[in-house]
Amino acid sequence: MERDRMIHFGLLGAFTCGNTEEEITKYHAKISRIGKKALSFLQYIIVNHGRNISSEELIEQFWGESGDPVNSLRNMVFRIRGFLKDMFPEEEGILVTVQDCYAWNREVLLELDTEQFETLCVKARGQKEEEYCRMLVRAASLYRGDFLSGNDGEWARTMRQYYQTLYLDACRAVLPLLYKEEQWLELLAICSRAYTVDFSMEEFTEYQMKALIALGQPEQAVEKYEAFRERLLQEYSMLPGQDIEQLHTLALGLRKSDVEEQDILGLVCEEQPDTQAFLCTFPVFRSIVALERRHLKRSGFSSTLMVISLGRDAVPTTDGRRLERILLEKLRTGDPIARLEAGTYIIMLTGAGEEEARMVFGRIDCAFHRTYRHSAANLTFRVAEL
Picture 1 (cartoon, rainbow, N blue to C red):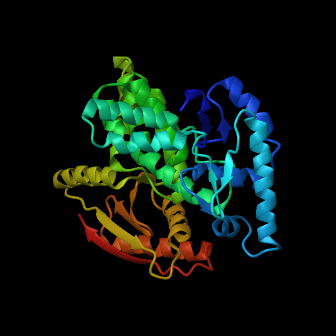
Picture 2: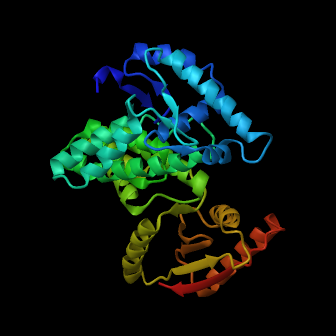
């Protein structure tokens, strides 16, 4: 079969036809005039070009039992054949009829980016590390966006999820290899694209921060962390994991590594304008508790740990944010707080005994229910002296 009879379609991202910018622009003008339903019908034929598609399948997919589906199908096929003839006048009979089925003419060869992408992902699995990495990088570069991003049909949404999962898995698999090979720019490019598909996968932020630190750009690593943390809190009411927190600490240290020696004391002792309690991750909280234990051995004073929970009837996400706000406002400046799970927080009350801790809980419980009168949360607590 002659190579010049090969037609290329791009299905990852916006729907395109052609290999060169000139071809893509030329065909786009024609595609934009076809109409939404007809375009979806054509895309369905292209995606399933390797098999015969029955009339029943097409009717169920595009018309169901509404109106006159048989006549609607015939009109659509007539329209699509005319469109394909206009697109590719040198080809004959691109959409053929085979025993009450419709099919793409096997003599008119197709090249789809989805098939290239999927083949690279599957074949890479059996390769040695260097080739495995090369094939996954190539596969990731083919993913220009979600499958047929402008098509909101149910069939397209199902396939969109499949290709998105395949893409994210490929990105996650290649990141450790690129890191090992110190290919920082390639790593940053893949993380940046993958982050737009699913930001909640922490690997993409983690490796972005690692690459930026390796490139001597700790300031940008801190910015990545802050943007990720804010979005994670906003959308999922969660904090970043321990690995990202450690990278953030490292980036902060590197960012300030050029401070003059005489400025070190001022940097450490500078007054913090915060008037709220200190919200931190659980690993940081454990470190603070460990330091407090050492201090208590020398001083002879006491401090207390308190665990506060919302109860079974609470709405974990909503009431969790409410409780967090009350804790930040009502506890003393610098009292550390960490989230154990949805709706459960642990607090260290420095210099407070068990009886004082019970009084603190009473104030928190009163403030919570006074502020959020309609909440079904039933706050409970446990205390233990350090």
